[in-house]
Image 1 (tube, helix red, strand yellow):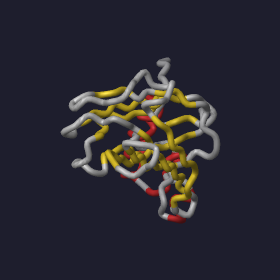
Image 2 (cartoon, helix red, strand yellow):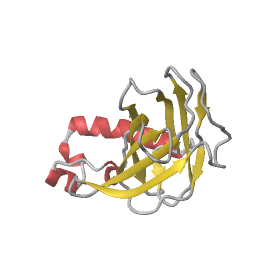
Image 3 (cartoon, helix red, strand yellow):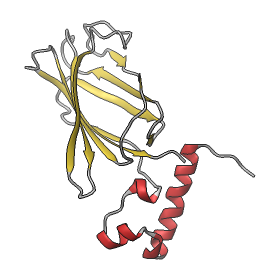
Image 4 (spheres, one colour):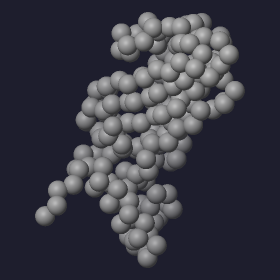
Length: 183
């Protein structure tokens, strides 16, 4: 017997799902067959987290973004790991994040799940002080409590500003991830 972890188990499910999907539709759940909508949480195979900077001309750009575990597990704590760089022509004197998180509902629509605004420069969660020098990078790693709710798809729109007035946009990104129920 070989013992595998959750990530390897999910990867194996994805491989098996791709094989079964290519062979026949009956391998999908009745709901997926009836609606034509594939729900990764229900089917047991979720795509990995994806992220994109939304404007390459803005000075604050992510260079790495990950969740551990990926996908997130409902009822279990997680870690969010983000690296970013100032690619602009001047130091960033302030760094405020405004985030909107959406969850995908059964009908395929996105519902606003959570909003938050915080001053990264003033936060005790990150060992970082502003300004962020030209070419400077920072690590925004944080631990989060157990996610609650349903196993489903989520999307975050993250906007970065130079002050709490939220008047001067300096960066933005869109992140997609999944959550699953524990095994």
